[in-house]
Image 1 (cartoon, protein in one colour):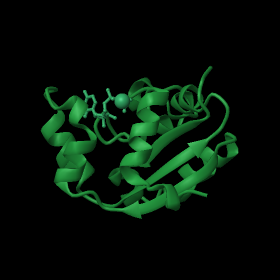
Image 2 (cartoon, helix red, strand yellow; image 1 turned 90 degrees about the horizontal axis):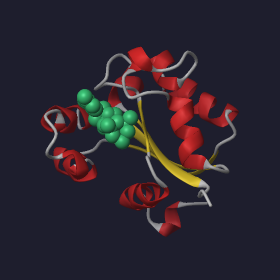
Image 3 (cartoon, rainbow, N blue to C red; image 1 turned 135 degrees about the horizontal axis):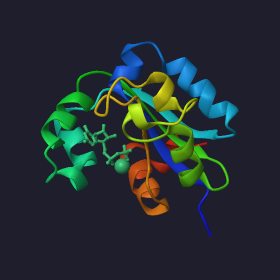
Length: 139
Ligand code: UDP
Ligand code: MG
C-alpha cells in the first residue's frame, strides 16, 4: 500500500522570486496537509549530504552550489498516495517538459533551478523528512 507522507523543498529560485506563497497555496489546494515546515538555508555540506545519491552525476557540484545559494522551505506533507500525487502536482524535472498547470510548469526557470523537490519513493520520503525534522518538530 502506498504511504501517506512525502517530503518537499521550495528551492532557492522559487523562494528568491517570491513564489513561496503561491506554491504553498497550490499544495494546500491539491489536498496536502502540512505535517512540518521550516525556512532555512542549507550549507554546501548539508546540501551535498542531502543529494549524496547524485554525487556521481555531472550536475552534482552545480546542484550543491545552487541548493545552498539562498533560503529554502522544507516540509513534510500528508495525503493519501502522497509520493505519487505530489510528483504529479510538481511535474517533470525539466520545466519545459512539465505538464501545464504543474508547479514546475508555472514557477520553474530551468532543469536545475526547478522550483521544488518531491520525494521519489515512500522510503526516501521518510529519509528526507528525518534529515530536516526531529519527531518533536511535527504536529
Ligand atoms: N538536476 C539538474 N540537471 C539535470 C537533472 C537534475 O540540475 O540534468 C537537478 C534538479 O534540480 C533536480 C535534481 O537535480 O530536481 C535532482 O534530480 P532528479 O533526477 O532526482 O530530479 P527530480 O526528482 O527532482 O525531478
Ligand atoms: Mg529525485
